[in-house]
Image: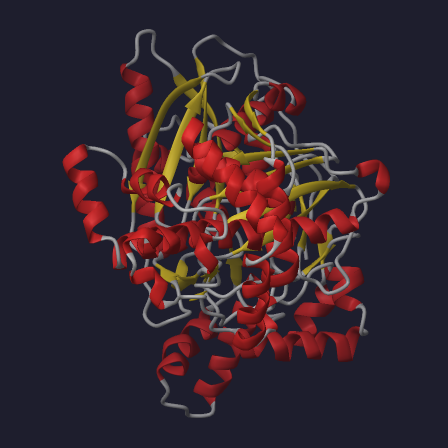
Amino acid sequence: MVHSEARTYKWQVSGMDAFLGVDVGTQSVKGTAVNAIGELLFEASTEYPLYIPQPGWTEQSPQEMKQAAFETIRKVVRALDSMQPRYKVRAVCFTGQMHTMILLDESNEAIGVALLWNDGRAAREAVEGAKMLEERLGERFLLDVICNDFLANWTGAHLFYVKRRWEDWKAGSSEYEAQRWGPVWERARRFLTPRDYIVLSLCGEVAMDYCGGSETSLMDIPSKRWAVEAFEVLGIDKLTPPQLLEPGSVVGKVTKKASEETGLEEGTLVIAGAGDCLAGALAGGVLDVGQMLFTLGTSGVAVAPIGTKPLVDPQLRTQVHYSTVPNVLVNMGCVNGAGIGLRMYRDVLADVYRTAANKLGVDPYELLTRRASQVPPGSNGVMFSPYLTGDRLVKAPEGKGCWYGISAYLLEPESNGDACLVRAILEGVCFAVRDAIEIIKGLLPKEGELKEIRMVGGGARSSFWVQLAADIFGQSVCTTTARDASYGMALLAAVGAGAMSLREAASTIKVVERFEPRQPIARFYDALYRRVYQGHYDKSQRQIDEAMNEVMRSEEYREALAFWKSSEMTG
């Protein structure tokens, strides 16, 4: 069980040096190059397949992942090479989807498919594994050592799932998953996440950053080491975990073979990165206690630095991770199904919006959010539960999404029924993220009171959605000059190469606009959250209907509706 302290490097910076950040995402790989002062030089991306063989399962091919990553790197290198003057990549750093499991054989070749961060097939194994750990290692083991739950979509539960299928296979089971995973586990010797796998492909080193280690449910967070005892209890100790490195430290250098495949020069520095949410925090300039990053993309994530000591939710609804700042931890709450809810509406129910968007040459999401603005807060009593791919906050790895409050009134033209459904999705996502924010705020000491929320991701491009977040959170929300996680890793590549400090990297991010909560609407949303949305997953439909009816007849709603109507007339 290996861990390592940071290996630093001091580069003699040239004006033509470029630093490359690569995000191995769920549906594409994006690369971003910056110069030595953090200015954007070029961006490129390459899509690759996502496989959903059945509800709750998500898979990808590590080989297709690698091909997409290398193609993205080639695109960036070619573009930099053609610039006048010519730029040369001096260091590269990786981020990507968190928790996703990739197995390696004795030769460090990827075997089997990657089980993704939103794959919930290990729900049963997660419950069983948590029970085994608590019975054998103490009932507070998850709280005090792992500082996280043993979650169904995290690396540890996926490894335990594969090991269980191997046991079924050895016992003669003919079930598909046993036949599929049995031979794979037989050959498995190591495990990595996607960003680590691309690092391995570039420099030949089997390594993982501390952020990655804390994403597995297999790391002793306070001691910054692998929890060897957990591997033993779960029976997965045949695997040798990767060495652990500080984000921003040097993992290795690009090999001759990788140079030929990517266009990067042999010897280019490969820098340890961080998970996409932590990379996003750096890209958003969020490093200090009192700040929070709200990332709204496929998932909705709230990330807040908490200092050097773990602050753990007693119910383990949020997660504790190491950040890009050495020894500094964050508390993170994740809503698996955020932007994916709007995508579901676009692809399944919104043909007319797609057609109109094509004719007008605009993004369908722009038309959808514009349509959502045409109905009042509360969506005429319609509420959306956004747990389309399960959820961690409500402990529902196999959870589903739904609309509540749909009535025949939506057939009436004045109801703008389709707009009610769309606005309810946007509101439901923000309410779910507020669950995370409330939990994290409850953990912070008084002196660490939450002062600022910065919003990034695709949702931050919609001023309507940002204002909605401010109204529902009851707190100001800022947009910034921040780009995405790949930009954060480009900055970290520069830090790792000695071109700038971490603080200098974060200081390049500026606030663009601050959205303040509109008090009449914020008061109504607070009532709607506390009386209806909060805890709704465990309520009956009858309870939700009664609570919704009460709120929609309340004084808070009348005041919000009047404010909204006056805003529409003046806006």
